[in-house]
Amino acid sequence: MSNQDFREFDPDEKDTAEISDEVIEEVTGKESNDSNDDTSKKPTEFCYICHRPDNITGPLIKMAPGMSVCRDCMQSTFDSMGNFGFGGGDNSKSNINMNKMPNISFLNLGSLFGEGPKVKNAHGSATAKDKEDRPAPAIDINNIIPPHKIKEKLDEYVVGQDYAKKVMSVAVYNHYKRVATGTMDDIEIEKSNMLMLGPTGSGKTYLVRTLARLLDVPLAITDATSLTEAGYIGDDIESVVSKLLAAAGNDVERCQQGIIFIDEIDKLAKKKNANQRDVSGESVQQGMLKLLEGADVEVPIGASSKNAMVPTTTINTRNILFICGGAFPAMDEIIKARLNKHSSMGFMADLKDKYDEDKNILQKVTVEDLREFGMIPEFIGRLPIVFATETLDEDMLVRILKEPKNAIIKQYQKLLELDEVKLDFEEEALHAIAKKAVEKKLGARGLRSIIEEFMLDIMFEIPKDDNIGQVIITEEYIEKKGGPKILLRASGALPEKAAAN
Picture 1 (spheres, rainbow, N blue to C red):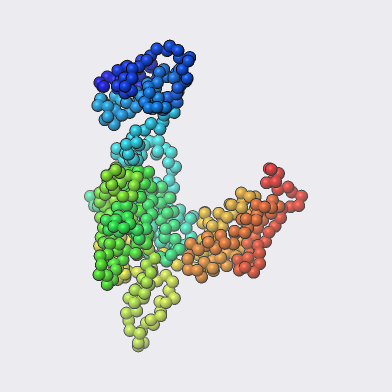
Picture 2: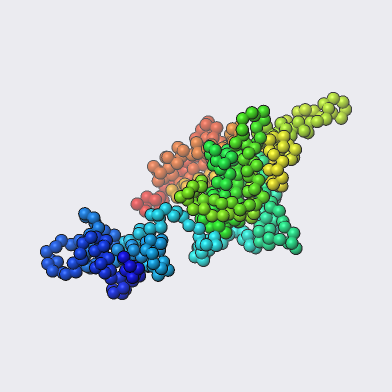
């Protein structure tokens, strides 16, 4: 076949899409019969691709038993193959408008040849349409607001943890000023990576997720327990950047301004008295050094691991903010041992149990304590900002139940409001729920499971009766000593839900 046969298809011009009889004969092995003799006697045939009848497309090309293709679809297929270098002609002239052909939007040979997802464009930036569709962020990283304004935004969603919110606000403010300016008087500003300690359920992940949502930057949350050196068993170290690229919609520019939160970082502590090779501890810390400081990383697009069939792109981690978090169990014993170095005898002695009742002892952590725990000095040095969250007490848990914008109680009230039922909680009931959460030592994470247990019967029974107008959760109901208060609607008023039916 000659290159003249691969012509551009335009459905508005009939003559430009004609395929010569020689091309048809070469593809089908049969001579073309353009005569319309006895067409009324032949059954109507349909194109296998566009499903148009032969009385509209003209004679069909027989490809296989039961499969015929019209000339237009055959020409468009040749032109599409020319775009991938199969036609041998000028690919720039093989630009076919596939949207003009009915019912063949699936004819994407790029997906058939396994090219996979693409980066937004060659430079990695989002298209103009993507930027227009994206809602305006609460905090613009190109015009970053002061730390106290960032903390005010966090206060709307996160209760307590004032010190942690202050530290994160300052760190984010300095980091994105660094991203926007690059240098100040030829002085390179180092990254503000953070290491956050805190007991389970204290809100570490929620703080990071809320901050990323307010900044409108992509966020990747990964678990350090799944990371191993070079991906021996689980994921390799660079997979955390692949998750951030996926969260950014394969947009390289947004990815390079995102946030990566690595949870359970304490599980990477160096194993003590280990004779075998530690592929999931110290070696992972060493492998993460280049990511934390800033390096060009080649990551797969649309996959978590590299292979020959997956395209890759290069991500620079210089402007990616890394936040590491962990509960660090037994760290309190290390801190107490350091604080109790004085003798326990004499007039100036410190009692050994002096810090046993200190619930926020993790806030006294130092770099020496982290090294004693098993974190290598090079890793700690690339996380210059170290802070700890507070342990949640009963009063803070009560505030968490009712104060934030998306508080748990507000969520259930909204659910019942859809059934036109008002839900209220007595103050004593809220304290009873918080007390149960403290006993379980699950922090704020345990509040939802406790409320879910008591709301199950209520959520099941309310849709049965349209006369229920209000439900009040009492302390007796939480303590399993009674039931909730249920108030009916006014006797003369017809329920709106019943009236609607």
